Image (cartoon, rainbow, N blue to C red; front, side, top):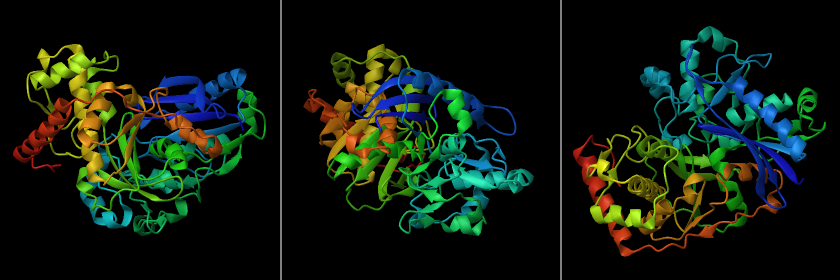
Length: 465
C-alpha cells in the first residue's frame, strides 16, 4: 500500500486526507467544520452532512491520488446506537450536552469504580456509559429498538463496509465500559444488559472489509479496496511513536482537547478527580493519561486567527508578571473546580502578548498533567501547539525535560491512522525544540505553580498540583 485515505473527524473540524506512506506525509487534504445540530431531541452531530462530505472528499482525492486503502480516526466520548436495519435508533449525542448530568446521581450508583475501569467520572456526556444510561432512561421506546452499539470511529467503518465492529482504543477512552487490566467489558455493561448490543471487538489495524460497491461507484475507488477498523484520535497520535521510540516518553496530542499519554511512566496513583485516566493504546496496553480542553481555551481566549507571539512578546509578559490561573473552560482538567483569574489586567496586553500569556498557561497546565501521570523522558508535542514556540518554550522550562515537536503537520492523527495500514513506513519527523529557555521562564513556571496552588485553595476547593 502506498496511498491511504484517512477519514479524520475531530470535535471541531473534520477532514479527509491522502497520506503517502512512502513519504509518510499528507499530500492532499479536504476539510470542513464539524457543527452540532441544536434541535430535538437533544444536541447531536450531523452525521449525514459529514457523510456527504466524506464521500465527496474521497471522490476528489481518488481523482488526484488513487487510494489503495482507507483508515478512520475520530474523537472519543461518543457512541452510536443503530437499529436492526442500520439506521440511527437515536441521534449521535454531542458529548458537551448536559442532559446526562440530570441523572448523575442514578448513574453514580451503577457505574464501576475508577480502580476497575481507569475511567474518571466526567461531566456532561464525556463518559459514554453515562450517555447510554441517559438515552435508555430518557428515550426507552427508542432504546428498545437498539440492535447494535458502536464506538464512533467504527460507525464510519460501518458506513463504508456495512460491517459492525467495535475497537479497543475507543472502548478504553474514559467510557466506563472497559476494564483495561482484564481487557474485557466492565461490569457496567453486564449489569445494564448491554453486552449483547455491542458489536464484536476488533483491533485497530485489522481489515474489516472492502468498500461497499455503491460507495465504489460514488467515489471511483476500486472494488476490493480494504477498510481498516480505525482508532481513537489521541491513540492515533501516539501510535507512530509507539512504533519508533523507546520508552520512557510522553505524547501531548493537541486539538480541541490536549491529551497527554505517558509510555513507561512512573507508577503513581492517578487522581480521578483531576481528569487523569487510563487509555488503551493500539497494541492493547493500558497507558496513564490526562487531559484538559486546551484548544478550546485558546480559541475562547484569543480566537482562531490570533497572531503568533514573538520572543519579545514572551519576555514582556514575563517581565510584567501577567499570568492566567486555571481554568478555562471550567469543569474538567487538573483543576476542575477552579475559576480562571488573571493576575493583572489582561487588557494591558498587546495581541502578541496575550497569545504568549495564554500559551504559557496552556504549557503549564500540560506540565501539571504530565506530573500527575508520572511522565518521564522526552515530551513529543503533536498538532497545532507544535508550531507555538511560546508553548514549547514554557513547557520545557516547566518540566526540565526535552520537548520535541512536529510543526510540519497540523495534526498527527491522520498519519497515526495511516500507520494502521503499514507501520513499517512510519517516520515521526519530530525535532527537539531549539529555542532559548532563559532562567526567567523557569522562575515564571515556579511562580505560576505557587500562585495556582494558592488560587485553588482560596477559591472553590479544587485540587492542586
